[in-house]
Amino acid sequence: MQASINARPAPPALSPEEQKARAQITPEMIERLVRGFYERVRADDLIGPVFNERISDWEPHLQKMFAFWESVALGTGRYEGAPMRQHIALPVSKEHFDRWLALFEQTAQEVCPPDVAEYFAVRAWRIAASFEMGIYARRGEILPTRQRPWSPGQSL
Image (cartoon, rainbow, N blue to C red):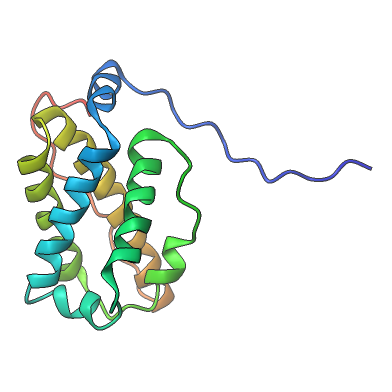
């Protein structure tokens, strides 16, 4: 008898623009992005308290986030965890997600070349939409799916 394998579908092929952006990303760039982003988060008056009340030792959290973003951006598979489980019960609203995205995009634009910042932003929006949907569904609420306002001619 053959064992069942829980296989994930293959990720969609990257566009040439995405391949070009991805080729520029390094673990060091991800570390700068993550550290810069969480520095802003910790100081933010809206989302800072949500994080600061739950994280007392930031370095282990940052190390997890480096692995998470390497997995998201580079497909390394370094991150092993269940991020939705960690976020599902958080006392957050649409405004928290809006701020998270604004801070993330601002940091990416400062740390990364424009096409790489866009590559990260697209993925951050997808993650935010998924988390927001899951959190609200757990509360028995349905929200419209978060959509990022796209710029004309933008293909990422």
